[in-house]
Structures are given as structure tokens and as C-alpha cells.
Length: 131
Image 1 (cartoon, rainbow, N blue to C red):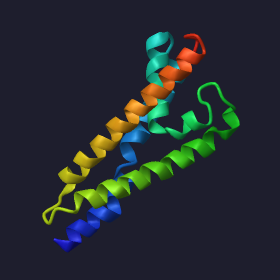
Image 2: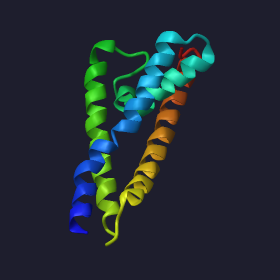
Image 3: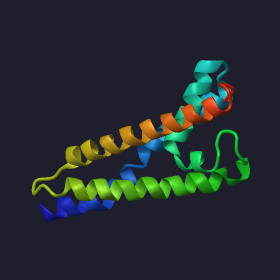
């Protein structure tokens, strides 16, 4: 039991980076290859959800030179949130990966809602011409 809980605590933050990485890559592909408003919305929301630090540096209209630092900071932030979720998951004596992913799903939804609000405010401030 201790070994399994220790494994959740150690590997959970690493595995929690996979969904943002996949969604971020889908968003980048949508921005690079797609055309039209649907591809733009998928691209912006995918990249901003995967790397919420982009909103802090003014993406998608800010200085692109600081985007790599925002992405790196977002990865660290995701890992920290995942460590908290792992701690919450192992409070149960029989914790398993389902407990961890349940906690992470709540975090993912909260970050998605925050990113959506941030992008909506940016679009509103630009008069609807975000893309």
C-alpha cells in the first residue's frame, strides 16, 4: 500500500503533464494548419488551456519572445497542481490512479474555465478581433 501511494505521489505530477501537452499540440496544429474561426478558437483555447501562463504574458497578442518562458512556467504550475492533487488523492488509505485522475479532472476543468474567461475578456477588450 505504501509503495503504491508513493508511486502516485512521484509519478502523478509527471503523468498529469500529458493531457495539457496533447491538447497544446492539437491547438498549435489547429493554429498552423487550420483556417477559419473554428480552427482559431480550437487553437487559441487549446494552447491557452495547455499553457495558462500565456495569458499572463499577453498571448495571443503579446510579445512572442516571452512565450517559451510562459510555457515553461505553465509546465511547472501544472506539476505543482498535480502534486497537490496527488496529495489529496492519497489521503485515502486505498488510493489508486482513479482517485488521482478524479482530483486532476477538477483542476483541469478549473483551469479551462479560467482560460476561457481570460480569452473572452481579451476578445472583448479587442472588440471581438482577437484572431
